[in-house]
Image 1 (cartoon, rainbow, N blue to C red):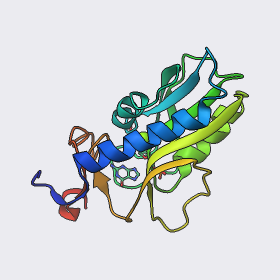
Image 2: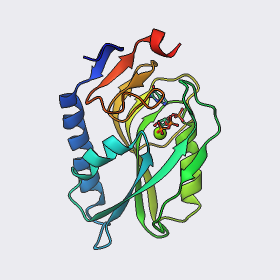
Image 3: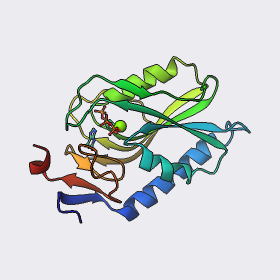
Image 4: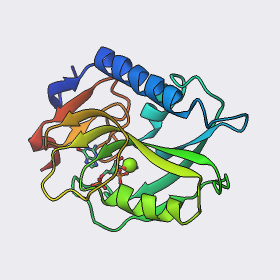
Length: 182
Ligand SMILES: O=P(O)(O)OC[C@H]1O[C@H](OP(=O)(O)OP(=O)(O)O)[C@H](O)[C@@H]1O
Ligand SMILES: Nc1nc2[nH]cnc2c(=O)[nH]1
Ligand SMILES: [Mg+2]
């Protein structure tokens, strides 16, 4: 285990099993509507990238994957509350079945913004697959169809999640020692 981590919350194996289950659920739920065009998985950079890469390989349907980059945390451990689009989609999602793939719902502000923004593009449907939902007080009410894990209100890293751009490459998800980010 990395020296800056106090506890592993989800091991590499926990993640592999749960992501496979989410992929199977999406496969079942969209089998009738996917058609030849398939679904569009919208991956939210940068945190959602690792989850997305595993999730799409667990979905047995035609699909397109596209990426959007937004950021509200900068280099800190607290949301600024202001969501900025750093990179927009290349795909026109109008009339398409869209699944947003995101790593974590914390304050919920990122997804609240994204749902409103993507809904205005008139997709045929729009759902969220979040690997984790944190037990955060006053979290925005986000309709989330697929949730991998509930997680405690601690600052966590790994499997795509960073602190100041580090730790995204850890193969597990762990709690960062508070002395590292305080
Ligand atoms: O529910 P919220 O409080 O909005 O927090 C969740 C968001 O915060 C992180 O992204 P961040 O803005 O740090 O950018 P990153 O994905 O590039 O790391 C994470 O990847 C989620 O997108
Ligand atoms: N790395 C990381 N990013 C976040 N963004 C919102 N909550 C978190 C968290 O717990 N860890
Ligand atoms: Mg993010």
